[in-house]
Image (tube, rainbow over all chains, first blue to last red; front, side, top):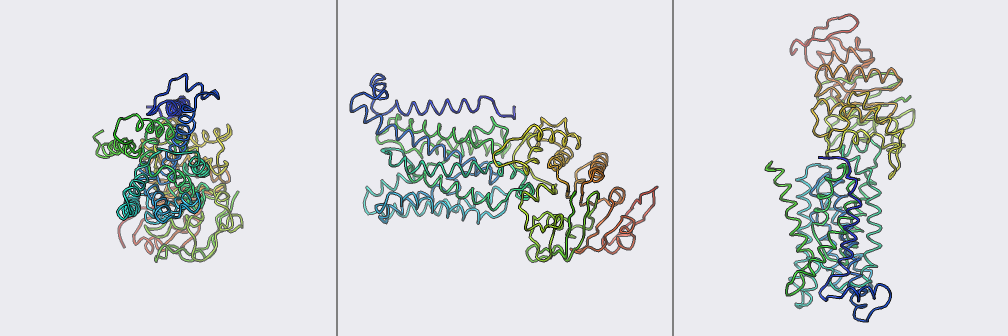
Length: 331
Length: 257
């Protein structure tokens, strides 16, 4: 087993991301002939093909890449910061909290005031959730404490969303809220891209800047401090990076779970295992994974389109099983 | 060259007074051993010397500058820390782990320069673990791991090295290697402070011993002056026989007083 970074890791991930983007543009419910698509991409083409490609599929592809990249990166960064391979925005309740903020914005009609209200509220609730999580888990390095704190936060925010579902005035509102619980990229426009993109850019920059602090945390909190890491600042960057990035992403896609769990788990064995080395590959891998999953939900023939969160949750289960089997020394 | 000074230092951990009114001056070129029974406040004292715990009272200064007014990175470049029983959270390569020692000298996103890599190799060689370079740190034996972590601390290249029980988990041969190394560091001009439990080792290698009891510094001076039957009976509650073997005393514990 090699422990240095696989030389082909980044090229392969880039190729996968590119393939996912291409697939997302070319595959969908309405089949388009390659000739029609090429015509659109070269600036011509018929009106129907233009509308499908540029107004429906392109923003959806962009969102898949942006949201997926952010979720993958946030998972990798949280795992490094908390020194726990099971940490992930949805497992720890950050995604659910952001979704709760979005649901509140919709439920109380705040979202109609200004398009920025919904993402802002999502970022704030996700920040509160992460602060609560760090507070509940304390300085303890035990995975159990952290997971328990995460369950508490995730359950509470999930209950909030379920409550709004429960009290929703009509079935349409209930359907809308359900989108936030399970996540979807259906019917998204460029407006959504412009909400998510700046948030993800800021969030990703904050998390990537923390890379070397995450490496130092391999030696524990005091070990990292003795290497010159200002833990307070590192924690603040981590909290803001996850809240702004994941909050902004969830504000357009709803809570899509497990991307941040699956991707670092898959790419870590191909790196030198240091937390900083997992960040960029997880960003690329997350973008590719979510975009592929989004192609999947479009192509799987079901009466109504599958929600993305359903598919990613199904993919997340094997990761937990692998950890369980290692823990029980069955593998 | 670096001087560490504690003035009337008191540290409280929760409700427990871990260190009480300790004043001492540690100078370059010295190998200073901190000894005392379990729970005497040895580890807390060195953590306070590194600015890792906030003192309740008193001041720690490095080269005359109060540690609280220095940035974490400034402290890290001046004093390397080898914690006790360090846990490793990710299965890093030994090479990568030791390279973490260069962190205080690097910017947030910069990579190791060839000079940094040479210093990492030099640290691996000094701790006699260069052959483990390509191994995974979490899969090493306890002794190998302790020496790799020592190499990590040496890689910082700081003028002060503060080690908490570096001899735990080492066999007698490697204990001697590590003490030889710490002494060589101090002879080369570094300040080396180490917590020790083996009194004979402390007597043999250290230039100076600080004896702690219940958070207080009860004796501070050359080993022969600190390691007296009276002091050891009072602090450890043991009767000892002190035998002079050439230049060094050998301390044989006989039983409880």
